[in-house]
Picture 1: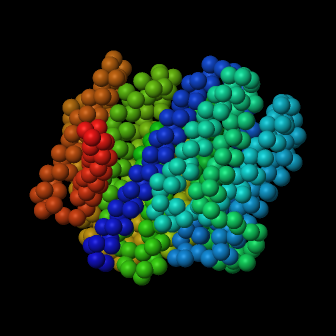
Picture 2: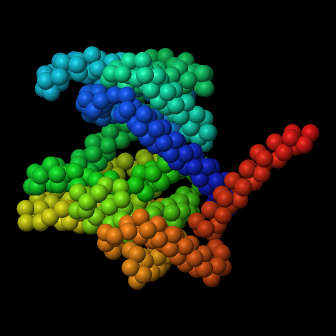
Picture 3: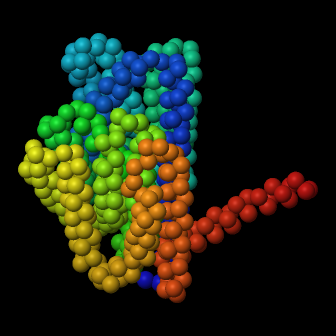
Length: 507
């Protein structure tokens, strides 16, 4: 593979990941602003009512999660039959979900002794149906690396949804403000999809054979992964208490932040890149290694860093009632950072239709985890559950990467060459923080100072260690060079945006 197409593809992937991460940041900020405003206008019961209804609707939707979008994205040149079939399958999925939610509204309301759930669930069923007719051709934004358009398609309805929800709440301060906001955002997104990408699909299943195989395996993987991820929570609740479940869930959520906020967006951007390489017939090994190196360079220090400052972080953000989550974050943070490499590998498997491999490794991980938890939790603690989860997760991802190396001809020496500087930098960073008493240490007196100090020192040590080893190695291709090139491109664009403004001002 020549350097030019590879570098171009990596640049597109990095740009796409940047837009997806940007969307996540905008969504988080909008959600925070919306929550802080709405809690002053609505009561806890209003939020709880909509949360119950949304949980039921999402559970039903997850069970019929036969999304054909990835099957279209991985095609070299999808034709009208494929677009239309994918649209039809999405519509049928939405229709089934809406029908089940609407039909079960009365039973759900009776189970929770809350009759107001019936109209709310009917409204959410309508929202699901509206979303199911969204323009399928918008997958081209991902397939052709037009992530800026996808960013606009996602963020514009979200901004309008937040604004409309607050507006409804000011006029009508009840749970219906939340419901109408959901309907407004979903409707606008569907309408905007046809404005941004004019295409009028028709109902047909002509290309179902080309889509069904991929979507069925994706659905099976989704179900198995969901069960695998929930088995520890279920068994913690069985052997301990609801309070223990809350602590364990919080620890897992905090520890997985680097993965959810960094790796998942990168995987979304990697999928069309790997698909393009598959169609071109060019070997994917070098690009895979570069992406693994970039992932490790960013995620390893983030995951280990969260583990290092877990004590002051929990004290600041959650208070003394949640101190039992500290060792869980320390254990899971390191394991999730290591396991993040498996996310890129799983995306590679999806692009190359190696879905059976992903299914079997995920199933094996879930079964081993369940067996160990059943055997060890009766005489163990929450730390036992975290250790089991960490060990099984690392083993599962190690096996996944090993399969990819064998399948795509990646020598172990090349993998080590792509990762060793990041690993060494993290080891040096963690060692210095522990030696200075800033990492893995309790901070009951001044948690804010401890966390800020550890974060600043850790970041400086990591950058210094990786920078020096990169220079000593002769500045080879890798995440350091890729990030410098990306930073240079951003600076160049910023200068380009500022210069016309200055010229106009002087003129």
